[in-house]
Length: 325
View 1 (cartoon, rainbow, N blue to C red):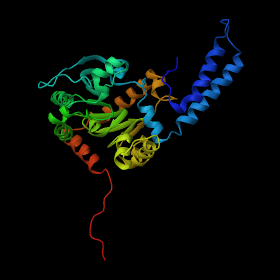
View 2 (view 1 turned 90 degrees about the vertical axis):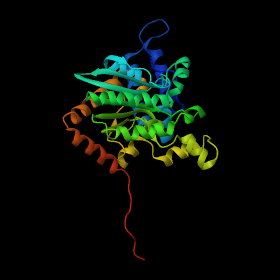
View 3 (view 1 turned 45 degrees about the vertical axis):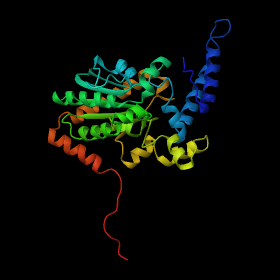
View 4 (view 1 turned 135 degrees about the vertical axis):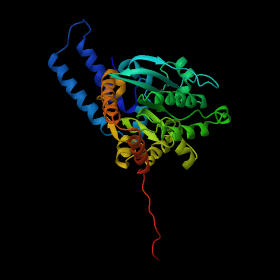
C-alpha cells in the first residue's frame, strides 16, 4: 500500500495509484482488465521517473522530510543485526534524538550512531523531532571513543533539521560540544562512514558528520541552514515564495554537493523515493556501507587520518597571492 502522507507534487501519482487499485480489485472482487492494468503500471512508472528526476531543491527538501521516510531505527532493524543500544552521556541524561549502539553489519562489528525523529506524535515528542541536545552529542562522542578503542568502524546516519534551538541547550554548551565533536572525529583512529539519510541541517548534522566517507541519499539535503532559516534572514519572512528561492540559492541537494566535492557518493533511492520502499532502500544503503568499510578497514591509522585530513582540507575554493595593480 503506498504511503498516504501525500506531497503536493505527487497528486498525479496518487491518482494513478488509486485508479490502479480500483482496477486490480473491482467492486465484485474480480480482477480488472489485465491489459489496462499493465498500461497504467507502465504509465505510473514513467510518471514517477519523470517527476523524481526533475525535483526542484525545495521539493527535495519536502521529500527528505516525508513522515514515512525510513529513519535510523528503521535501518537498524532492516540492515544491522545484534543491535545493543547504549544510553546516557554520564552527565545529564539520555537524549532520544541521537541513538547509539553496537551492531553487526555482515561480517563486521560496528558502532551505529544516528538521528531519530520518530514516526508517531508521542515518539517525535520524545525525540524532539530529531533535534539533539548537548547530551546527545556528548553521548555520541563517548561511544565513538569506545568504538575507536577497539577499532570498530563507526557508521553515522544523519537526519536532523538542526541541533535543538532552546535556551537550555545553549546554556549547557551546545556550540562547544559540537565543535569538540568536529575536532575529535577528525582524529579518531578508526574508520568513520557518514550518510545523510534525510535532512542534514546545520551544526546538528555536522556534530556527527566528519568521516572518511561522506555520502547522501539521492533525495536528502545537506546545508549550513534550513531554507526557512535562510529565508528568514535574507527576506525577513519565510513564505511559500521565499523558501524555494532560499533552497535554490543554498545549493543543498546531493547533485550540487557531489559537484562541489562535499560528498563522495549519491546513493540512489527506489523509484518514487525511499518512503515508498523501505526494504529496497535499506538493501542499497547496506551495499554502500559494506563497500566503504572494505575500502577503509585495511588502511593503517596514519593513512586513515591523513586521508581524512586531506579530504576536508581540499573542500572549497580559494584564491591566494596579491593581484598586480
